[in-house]
Structure formats: structure tokens, C-alpha cells
Image 1 (cartoon, rainbow, N blue to C red):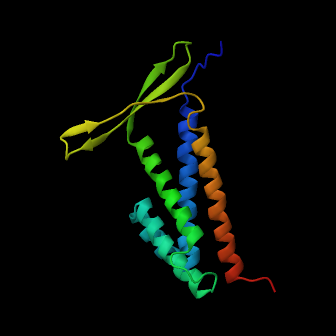
Image 2 (image 1 turned 45 degrees about the horizontal axis):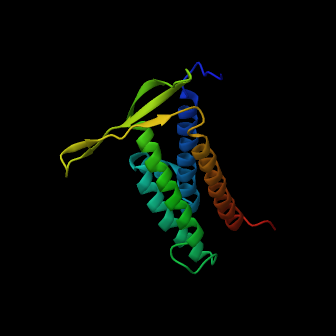
Image 3 (image 1 turned 60 degrees about the vertical axis):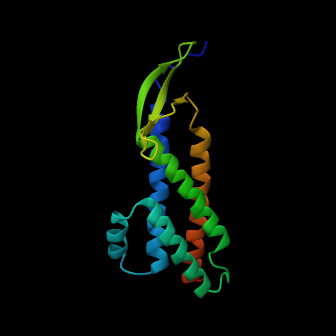
Length: 168
């Protein structure tokens, strides 16, 4: 039997760190596209929730792409799709962060975690907390997906840099 002696805490940590890298990249993209004093951008970004940063970047990037004749569509189709996916990942990140965790020992002795969200449904007058068991590897696919989307965002960043500073 393969018994894990530690619950998947490192996976939770990796999920959060990768998400923070995505959030930092979003802020850097805002600064790059706006082409202004970075202190202005970072001051505003520090006060915005991630979803607001995504919405702002979606609009800012679309305007930038249209000005630079990279698209005539509004919003920029591929970029808008990426922002929508990142918003879904942000919701998952919020679920993970705003939850209570308890130790779970499976029937084969493997250590895992049970996650209970802390959501309230005030319209129904109840707490909504369906549990989720997190076994080792449970977040691996989501972490991989997040890394892939980070790479797509980085490609858009490269596009901005290449457009702004073309090779002679």
C-alpha cells in the first residue's frame, strides 16, 4: 500500500503561488499596455480585486490592439477568452483560500484534506458548504492548466513588446 504521510499541503501552496504569478503577470501587462509610470499602475492595481484587473486589462488590451491594427474586433477574441478563463481560475483560488480544512485519513491510511467552503446563501438563509476531499494530486490538473494559461498570457506580453519595440 502506498501511504502518504503528509496531506497535500504543498499542492495547495503550489496552486496559490502559481496563481500569484498569474496575477503579477496581469498587473505587468496593464503597466506594459498603458505605457505609463509603473507606480501609477501598481498603486491602482494594489487596490483592485483580481476580477477588476482582468476586466480592465481586457478593455485596455482590446483598445491597444485596435490602435495598433492587430484586430478590428472588440473585445479581442482570444484575449477576451483568456481573461474569462483566468476569471474562472480566480474563483477557484477564492474557494481554496476562503475555506476551512480538516485532516482526512482514507481507508488505506493515506493522509488527505477535506475542504469546506465558507459561503453563505443569504437569500435562502443558509450556509452552503459542500465538502471537497483533496487527495494527493487533486489539484495537479488545475495547476497544469493555470501554468498553460500563464504561458498564453506571456505570449500576449511578448506581442505587446514586439509591437512596441519592433526589431529593425
